[in-house]
Image 1 (tube, helix red, strand yellow):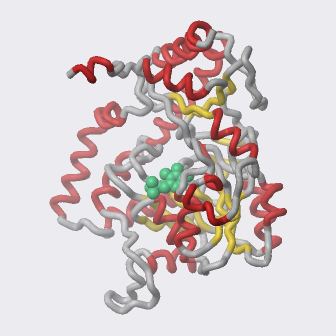
Image 2 (cartoon, rainbow, N blue to C red; image 1 turned 135 degrees about the vertical axis):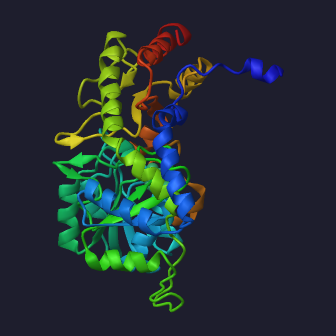
Image 3 (cartoon, helix red, strand yellow; image 1 turned 45 degrees about the vertical axis):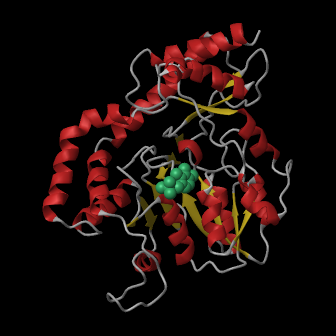
Length: 395
Ligand SMILES: *Cc1c(COP(=O)(O)O)cnc(C)c1O
């Protein structure tokens, strides 16, 4: 085929799930066999065991397995009793589901801008957006680093708002020693395959320390049955299945090693980019220039970043991404369009220029390969190709 000849050979993919599977193949097959032999596929003992393990890993009292990260957000908002017309303050710089879940219940996502160094919601901006209709805050821990939770919780307490942590990208991340999903009233996790703890399909988890909310979520994820076929409330089918739970239980045992490898890769990118003369920042600067076209992620003080993504800022981002791809290097933009500018929210009246920090991020960010099994030498390959772009291609 002539078209395949034109395709670049992939030298460094953005993510290599096959490489990970090869390291745990036997354990996974044994776990899958166990479930298949039992023929118990929906909820049940595997799901309950995973719920306990994730809750404990995330320093929470309760975990409730659900069908996806999206459904975790949806059922969390149902559990706090979000009603049509209620406002939920959140970030415009996230995966769509964060705001989509609010809108699906008739709520209004009220966006406020982000901190330029962490890409997470700016607590100062939250306070100014609170109205009589505000019901909750969804803080997203983007790319694997937690939002500044202390001021967020203070504002929430003062205004009697519920706080939901969208921890889909942040399992095991820490803020002042506290894990993602353990600080807000509810934490929402995703086991989408590309997350740090990824299943063999869709899956998610809600965490909480509140027994009442835990009970409500258990009720809602299974049609509001109590007992079966007697519907106390209108819920849905947000159940996690046993095959996913069995896979995730195997993978959870390896998660800390994988996180350590991601953090090591992140630490190794920095000197390589600096040596190549590309770096605009060592710590907190986020301003890039033609002379120093790349800024690396900033780790906030007292924060354990788990690097679901290693996201740089760079000048001429779209050209650089095309160049990387033409050399077989995986790179991706998370996210090219901030949520307030999405077509589906057009009627809410947001306009371009309203959240300049988010909009600038959307035009400058680029995720580079960081996955744990990245072969030694791949980081240098990526940096070499970036350096060649700025020295040869762009000049
Ligand atoms: C992945 C993700 C979700 C949604 O999770 P799914 O399991 O794909 O439904 C929600 N929020 C954020 C920030 C995510 O990254």
